[in-house]
Amino acid sequence: MAASNASEQLLSVLRETIVALVRRDGPDLSARQLGVFLTVYLTEGPHTVRGLAAELNVSKPAITRALDRLGELDLARRKVDPMDRRSVIVQQTLKGSAFLRELRKIMGEAGSGRGSGSARRAANA
Image 1 (tube, one colour):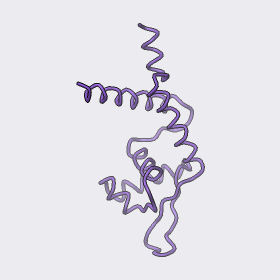
Image 2 (tube, one colour; image 1 turned 180 degrees about the vertical axis):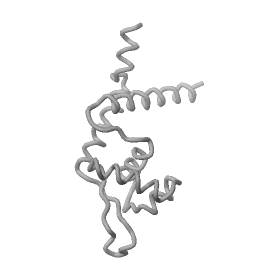
Image 3 (cartoon, rainbow, N blue to C red; image 1 turned 45 degrees about the horizontal axis):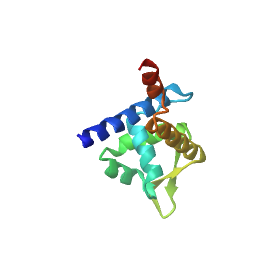
């Protein structure tokens, strides 16, 4: 029962976080783009297209498409590896670090019951 309750809480935090991201100004990220973004920012690098594809178990073209979008939004950038010019290193950006801070704040609010869904449920109680 406790595991089920914890799962429900995690799903609620995930839902409220995604809803908050959708409602805020700015572009939305797909699940794949968010997965690539979080892997680059939360796991130890350096990160390469090949390594991200292996870690996320998706094709290199799928990683490339996700990185194209993250690059357009300045949330990550690609740089040719000076040690191996065939390899591309994925780097963090200042805007990406700011987005991660915002994401942490949104999740914290959702987890503490201060998210939009919690407020709506409290008002309806």
